[in-house]
Image (cartoon, rainbow over all chains, first blue to last red; front, side, top):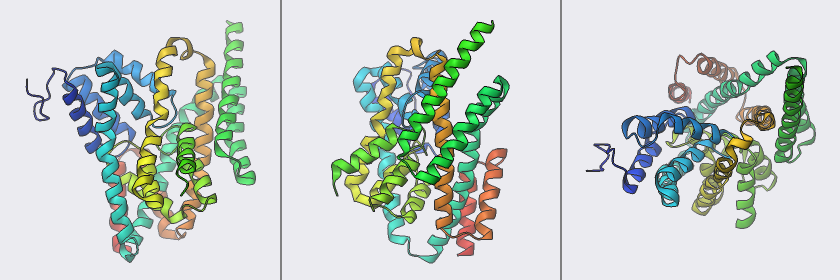
Length: 203
Length: 168
């Protein structure tokens, strides 16, 4: 069966795996949710190489990793379909062309960045990015705040302490950032453990 | 350029964070203090990152290219690809750790700190580009549109770019 991108073959080949990721890498504009959608389309619906349940497990496991979680999806899907070769080929397909395009666009920016119109565009685009980042941050934080508001005063208190405390420490002392990530993570882990124990005792 | 130091700094930023913007506070702190990058380069890299295809986080490749050329971009790509391999460890232990309250607490705690820092750093970069009514209005409008989900993020950026061309 022909494994060209025009007819997405349901028969698995390593080449097909590479092409699937290449396509995702080249058409993924607009961030993580779009990439996820494309992954679902490509692997679950069109090629049917993984099931919805497998995908759900992959999604859950990928939340608990450092770095870009989409890359974790790529690694797990690649491993599932083709072992270590599958991992290598998947990562190459996703990253190589998009990183190359990124470098290309960056170098064009570098050449044109002194042009006044480009500078003006850069400022306005960044203002929009800032706004979108505020929206994204709010969407990341909102489920945590909602959950913890429902769990009670302690949960909400810990949330606010971590949020505001880390901001204050960062602004006043400018410490190494990862130390505070670890500190926030530890606070969260300890607090949630404690609350879970309390909730179990109350059952 | 001390490439080992450079790679370590980038890897550290990615390893101790999560998500596309995650490495921002750490990279900002280190690149500025080493004198490797300017605020403007951060602005450029973040903007390029929104415009290129592929997963979030490629702005790091853009920044490292602006700062250190193709070798920088290469090292950044490797630094981005390594930390997610931790998922293989997660997979191994999955049933034992995923359900623990502590795991969720760790995740939530880190997310809260990242959000808090990201807003502070992004505000700093935003201010360094020059504050005026137009910029603030664009930021507020973009945030509102993004939250409402009526307009896609890509469309917001295209409109902002066009607006900039008209203004500039």
